[in-house]
Amino acid sequence: MAGKSKIIYQCSQCGFETAKWVGKCPGCGEWNTMLEILKEPVSPQKAAAARSLGSRSHAVPINEISTDDEQRYHTGLSELDRVLGGGIVKGSLVLISGDPGIGKSTILLQICEYLGQSLRVLYVSGEESARQIKLRAARLGVQSSNLLILTETDIQLVVEQIRQEKPDLVMVDSIQTMNHTELTSSPGSVTQVRECTNTMMRCAKALDIPVILVGHVNKDGAIAGPKVLEHIVDAVLYFEGDRQMTYRILRAVKNRYGSTNEIGVFDMGDRGLKQVENPSQAMLSGRPKDVAGSCVTAVMEGTRPLLAEIQGLATTSGYGTPRRMSTGFDYNRMALILAVLEKRAGFYFSNLDSYVNVVGGLRLDEPAVDLAVAVSLISSLKDTPVREDTVVFGEIGLTGELRSVSHSDLRIAEAARLGFTRCVLPYHGVRNLKSGAVEGMELIGARTLREAYEACV
Ligand code: TYD
Ligand code: MG
Image (cartoon, rainbow, N blue to C red; front, side, top):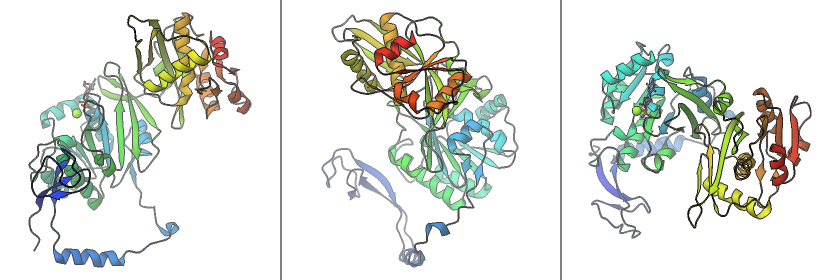
């Protein structure tokens, strides 16, 4: 007969196991690495059964494996479907994460209306009362009779309910509030989060129902709980954006069923999140005219081109060491661009405070943004506005050379669609372009940073 599962302590560094908690791992000598884990004893009969099952499994040629049963549920939000790679895959475990108040609970509740038309959805909340959820649902216009609400924090009771109600889709808001009663550590601790996620994963795979988990982020912006959480789940979606602004960007950080480059753009209104059909236009709305330090660039987000405004500010420093700050753009990359501007192009920033900001709460890490960052900084330095009809993109190399980037034609087409008529890009990029892809757009190929800047003003 199988015994009760017991708690042991395992070192997260070397895997050493003890029955009692210790501060220093006897195995590897690391401090504070012992984590509580639940060990299920394996009965001899079960082990024998598993082994006999194991002996029956054998390798199969890849072209004989059927993929017909990959079924996806559409959420009614095409932006969300896009990030998921085409919808929620049956039996998958998806983690949605982001800062508090960014809209995780809102988006989940919102898609329940559409999903509820054909599926039974169980929404488990450990954060809000059923009444609070009902009030929010009413505001979002969600009144599906197929939506079941469960306020519970005991993960085993949640699984029990899932087995009883047999929903087609489960949402758990949030995984940090769930707890496994056999573990003594408090909800939200590494051990609890991992064990609860594992429980939900077993449930998702065993019953073949998709489960969406909400995960909190900690102060550093990482998903609270161990990195293993990201390893366990099939997809990790990250909600980003400025809470002060209404735009929200949903990005896939990991996805076993789709690309991780795609983003979805939403706008938070008084009736929940709305999809932004024309993100480029949204990102450029309210762009200041005739002001130095603003420059528009075209980036690729997955298969989609997107225009974004980059702002740069260079101002006399009050301190011995000048300040550098960037929002939405990699800080080290900015430092590198400033160094190149100084050393290779003769624009001096060494005694100036320099700031870079990507408008709209976007995070851009494509090298194609380099040139726009450089141009906006020079524009601020020289106090000369960049021409309003001009869009800029290109990568900057350490020797000050401009390097062409991929998908120039798509970027240019997007800029043309939004009324831009001039495009400054690396010289080699122009040569590689297929003719005809860029009607009504004046292309200016720049060889050096200075040439690029002069073409912009
Ligand atoms: P919420 O989904 O509760 O955030 P999370 O679950 O990620 O912590 O989002 C709440 C925020 O969104 C809150 O600040 C209010 C705002 N909001 C709206 O602006 N409009 C709405 O229709 C809803 C439901 C929320
Ligand atoms: Mg919430």
